[in-house]
Image (cartoon, rainbow, N blue to C red; front, side, top):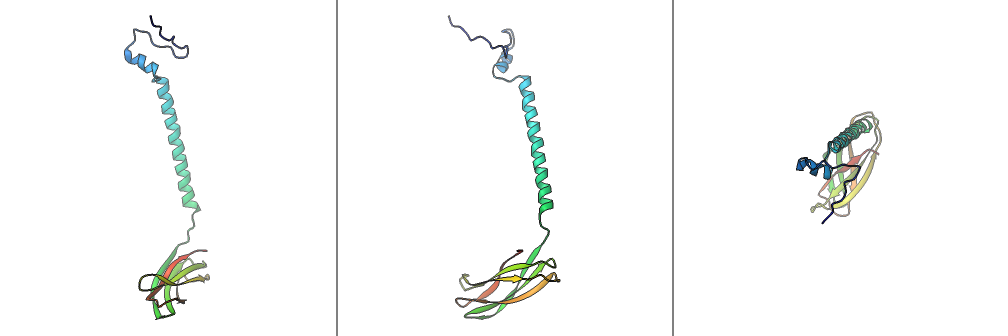
Length: 150
């Protein structure tokens, strides 16, 4: 004769006259109380996600800098075997300092000259600049590589 384990006092099993599905639900923890727990945890997780997302949106919208910077290449001239003159335009809020990197390229698009130029603050929004870049070999073009706010 085999003996079955005694039911625990914490979770009484339904009587043997109950439907088989009810016995399985009780045995594997699928009771109405467990369903409420899952629903409660899901609601708390959703509220926490919405709160974190809202904080991220507010932080991103309010803490970012409003300064805008635009750079436009105007061309190059005077390409000699040892230098090229780069012309470009910078648009930024008046009173903002800008730093730009200029580059000269050879026929294989290799960088043969490089120069960092610091542009002081001015009252105009859009300004044009012309700078010479020394090169290690004959360039075929010169252009602004990138500008940034210090």
